[in-house]
Image (cartoon, rainbow over the protein chains, first blue to last red):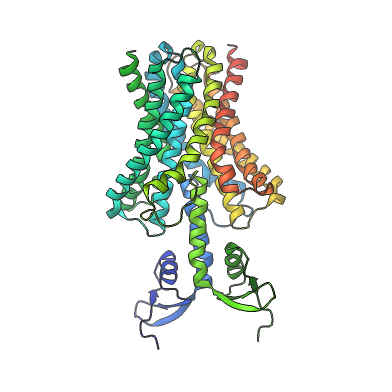
Length: 252
Length: 252
């Protein structure tokens, strides 16, 4: 007879129940009330549905969707608008800051026309890198693989991964611009663009890795607090890096 | 005695096993070999780990990460670079097309300086809308809620949700630009920017909803085939819409 009985309470979070069943390979777990009396059991098959639902919720939150009950087909248009509009509005307003940065450096942009053509590549690369690192860390937190205590490990790993990926993208991009680019793309312009990509990739990786852990530490939900905002933060940072490097290297 | 016994074969996909256990609320399922002989069982607690792993894989793929075995902490730097670099490169190269579009309309941009300041807001809003709809549909496909047969329902729903969200963002953005914007922001400029946001939001919603279903139909993985590319497609489309509207309404 197994004397080591696992149990949960009526107010235990359903994710915790799933985690216990999964961790100890149980097919059932006892449920106790506040007076430690057995009032029922939860079976592993109940938990299958819960895990799927929780994963769906996390996935939705990471893309700036407030989770809704029910499936795509069962969710009405009005409810779907409600679940999407808040983040669309918040992110639209926060993107105006990126716009102000562009506006602020307007004269630099017109001084070297070729600079504006590289803005999408810089912003999208940094955004993708930020999404990659934040996704890995947010999911790591969700499956109890990462906690705030690992912040320095995450920091170091994202730094190295960022530097390595950044080096590869630097070379690819430099070749693309300097060798295959138009005649106006000088060595220095190629250098500014490629260097911006590398630096903003590293900062995006670090921001994406650290912000979800900080959100968790501040008792916020990493998926909804960190993920949708990271792109905006990363967009603004990479543009500032771009113009700073352009001012220093191109002396504009 | 229950005569309605559920079973799977040795080569049944683990996701399918999970789906059956979850659907029929089973705690165990029989496993048969090719000769229909019982060779073992799978219990619901085994499937808990599988479901969690599969969800992690899907989440990673949607952010352009090639899934790795093992947790964040256990994955080495080299392996992590490998899992991230391909999509970073593919998306960096595809973002050059967005750059070419900007370059092509360079003279229009310099004619009305205020136009470039709104590029981040347009691209990020469309990108966010595309991420929202593609996320919902990709997850819907993963949990067997959506299939290619639902494509017209998805199309209609994304159209209506897009139009409603687009209308709200149109009003917010028009007020922001025309009432609170600088003196240079005329009625027509505010109209061009706000209209671009609405139209590119609707197209992003539709692209995000339809592309994963088409990927599935073409036997490709919706998460890795559709999700990372949608931002690039949506970026390019929204810039083209922007310049077309600017040419027509501002007569530049």
